[in-house]
Image (cartoon, rainbow over all chains, first blue to last red; front, side, top):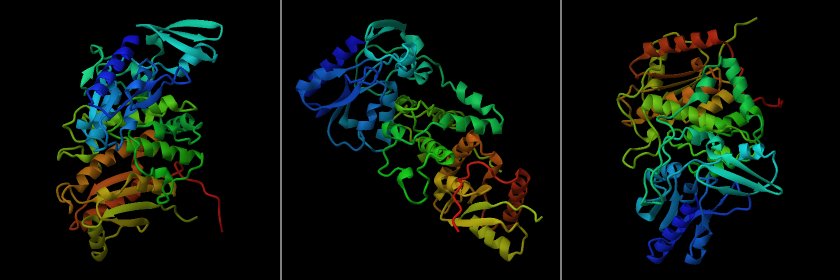
Length: 314
Length: 143
């Protein structure tokens, strides 16, 4: 992954020199090796702070909303699809952006790695092509990358950016032919009572910190529905309130979610939040053959219609 | 003991289904009295939040009704509502709300008889299902 980093720095330097961009959005080394920090760079001297590795799982598109400058941005498959969404929803224009495309080989699941090293403190993660070394105080362990990918990366259909101005390396093959929804189907097949119980159990730990909402590139409403007075959806951790929050947030992402997995990554209590949005993605794919953020020409799912849409209601 | 009657919230579009309810009334057609009708400008005005708010406050079913596709007063409102509704219905089914608690129908203002028929059909279905006991926000009793 080192060569990605150097290539990104070279490109950023060149863009600043040619005055093509005002700021560059990328990742820098964070205090925790599992969470590289998103960084907005505005001076050429700072370019060497940029990095890329397999822990860069936050969606940088989140920082584009409503910006007026010319922006260079690092984007792998899911981020680029979120950018397409942003352009379609008029949050940014294509001319403002210089997209540095990353052929993504998957993001690592920090929870499973932490568990694999018995929750010992990790100082550094050293990556090579197919494996990575976890380094901490008095220990060093090597793992195969393929075994520790995030769940959404295992079934990723678009690891390569769908729009870009320049790629840092050659495209990588996608890991799945078409969207895979095994976990959704498993819940669907349960009888209704069991399904209720199962869903309640999934979200029972939720502390309503809204980290999932804040990290989501789709959640850019000035006032979120949970902060509104009318209609008022409780802010407590009552099971119905929590379920309302998750259901409605998922519904607001219907036909827009690119399954980047950032929400699940940042959740402090490891709720599989993606399951709700995945259900909607599945329905959107089955009923409307829709996958979000693939083309700049297509109108978003819920702002368009066809006269022969699904129409069997009564 | 008196018979249990469901609580059904109906979002009717001003231009078609609300007119149909009116027509059903003046034609003296029989339909159950426990529909709480809320008049909305268009079926696409019905936000997912309204539906969830209804369920949270103890509605046993929610019924959305608008103009026939192609006849929308705002040209295309019900087409959008249709796409949104099917996704919402599938999602609510997924979390454990029975699909028989959420209805969408197209009734024009001339179809008073159809309105009464659909209302009777929905009432019968919901009655068979029984009271909703999920997704209700329990509140402290305040006298």
